[in-house]
Length: 249
Picture 1 (cartoon, one colour):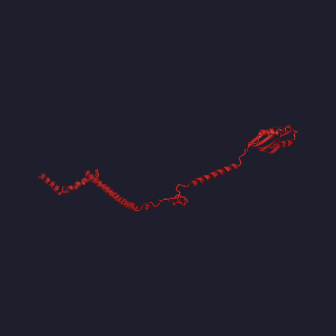
Picture 2 (cartoon, helix red, strand yellow):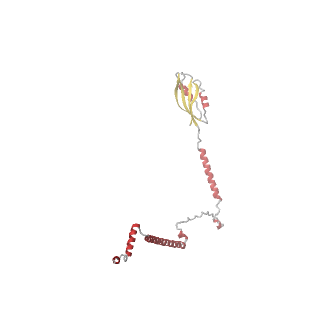
Picture 3 (cartoon, one colour):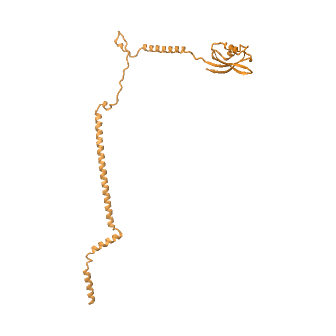
């Protein structure tokens, strides 16, 4: 009897507890506890993944819509430019060629002058289409006159004469020779193309002096050999003649 009483009291206690009626709440609390400890469950992760994918898809769709709007704008502008171009080409095709190229100007062509020949017998001979032989003869005559005038002018021009400057050393026999008379003898030599210049006395030694005298000669008329030969003819005063310097002018 006492054992039955004890069991009844236990049932009464269980009957008074309402834990089984709130089981769903306790299961939910247990699930939240384990999720906090181990992370979200697989279903929640899949749900979160689907949510992220949907958000990325929405973002891409918005980007494509923006690109599509930009493309529509570019196409619209291109169509407007194409219409303007077609309109301009149509205007150019309708306008004349002179208006299409206004900057090109053709130079006027001048006709060659035509010489008229008077002829009372026939009026058809007023125009000489092939020129006249008189013009060729006149040009030839003028050319020949110019050639003759140039030849005459060139013939009158004096030819270039080759000249040389010669310095002579004229030596006496001794110190008693009259050097003034010696120089007088030298200068007495006269030839066509010979011109005497300055002179001076140069000591040689032992009181003897030589005469240095300059002269200019035309090469075609006077040579050094004939000049020395003519000077040494005065053998009473002159011992020898030497060429000290010879320069072309």
